[in-house]
Length: 342
Image (cartoon, rainbow, N blue to C red; front, side, top):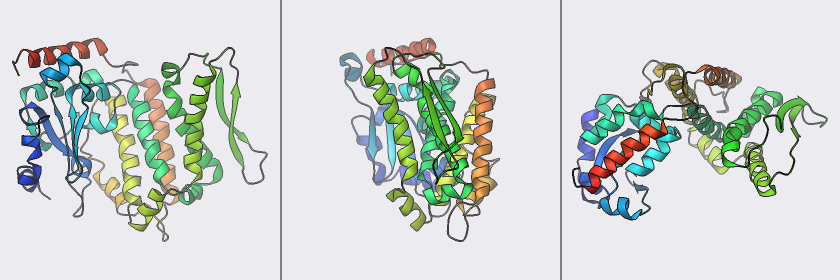
């Protein structure tokens, strides 16, 4: 599907909600491509994804009404409210940060305020990218069949699980009661179980720690282990409909985008340089005769995880985004909305 065809589709009656919905219309500041078309990994069967942002109304701003986004499932369109989008960008949410790194021609509409948002995109870049993208990469990895994960060996699979738990727990100290760095130690050691070569162990040294906070942390870690231990319906569906390669491709793409942010402070959504590799993964070149990922794919994942860890430890990015400047930008935009200037 070429760009002109896409523009014609978005201009058609099917997308009239962009122009007629009370939350959208002249409040839209950005409309762009999403999904495979935005990444440059689309094929002849790829659906069109549209992503965007619309300003909050005067009423929503002044009365603190809670409105987050408009979704049209039929056309796979999501348009975020400005205030909601900013909060997601501050956490370097992959689904939204990629909207700031599209190819210029992939922005189907961009208002002056939309241009301001793109101009300020560096404000949102921080070490939070490693946690955010790592979490999404973990979700993609969990989509792969448990049987496939075992192809790399039980010990390597255990390392995948530990990496996933570490991604989940990266911000525990921000969300739960604080504890010393050495209070919770997770590591892999030789297992005493007959069916395991190695397994994850934990050393916990906590004193007067809130039980509910510990329960919540434990629950998050437990869910990671549980997700790896079962073959979900989505995994089966992905295999049956030849979508496993697509999940594998997106996993690697997430690592690539995160490395761009950590190493070069750039948001690169369209993966031109890695197009050949990504498409080879999507087209099944890393699947065996039973449509299961081959060991070389998981070796690639391990390599990217190591690169991400190194990049996070050596990046010049701040721990957190520039909240003060972001708040000033948001206040300026919302003040103009309230005063009827935009």
